[in-house]
Length: 435
Image (cartoon, rainbow, N blue to C red):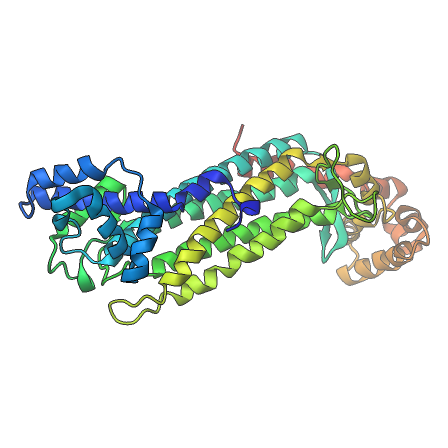
């Protein structure tokens, strides 16, 4: 997590002060529940909130204590006692460190999810706006990187909208799965703490109760969460690569906005490079790479070990901060994307009408020609055009076999670009609804 690829709101989720604030709230809410069921005095529970509820924790002091204790939660509790005094003996009653750490991580990941979901909402709005703008802007569709048949730029954007709508659903599901609370004590048996404490803390923090937590929340939840982030990152990369291709000099159907004073190359003043989408490709690799360690964290020893801990301390902040930045960057790219309809039309015309070859093939079969012969007749006229040796329609009109089945007028009708776009409205209704 470095400032270059970080945004303040997501960074604050992982700030040390935020973490210690959540730790305190977990402990204080637990004390409220313990007081309610008569385990500790109610006045002590109130005093804990009054003395430490609004403090700014001294991170350096906690680090200093941890250098001695070699235990972060104990260091925090020791610092907390410096504020609370004698009533601090009731803090952490019957709890274990994972109760605090895992529940805090659940809160942080839930908050991070909320930011990511909002990011996707902003991206969806940008994509929809540009999709409607270019709903009927024709552009060549490509398969294997080769010109195939016409689509519209709006359809490309509609596909991205549908893709990120699915991403949103996945993030919502991942948030629900990760947002669980465990206050079950050593090895998760509730031997020294009443399950009602867990229920109370969960409700206060907006979490669900973890059904069986051993001494830790099961890591399959975390694996699913980070895998979801990896899928979202992959969708970002797919869209970024599409834009990068469209910005290639020999294509130039769209390009990233190039601001006043921006420089593309330290050596070549003419350059306008797709640096933002290239950056997004790299960021996507990072987020995806964090899914595998999360999956490997699932296999812990018995009721717990801490082999997952070092991994999560890094991938929790890094994956969410990076994905947050990437989603915001992609939104900016789409919002300001420069589109060149004239170049799109130029590329559509580049192969001399070959993009209509399937229509000719099908028309011949409708006239009683076998599919095999139809294909051969069309292909023998297409290949010279592919080599730059003529115009497809002209060659077809001169082909005796084709001419015997299709008139010049019928052939000309088969080269109508609008034919390929007749169901754009249907697709848009599926993606964006009737409106």
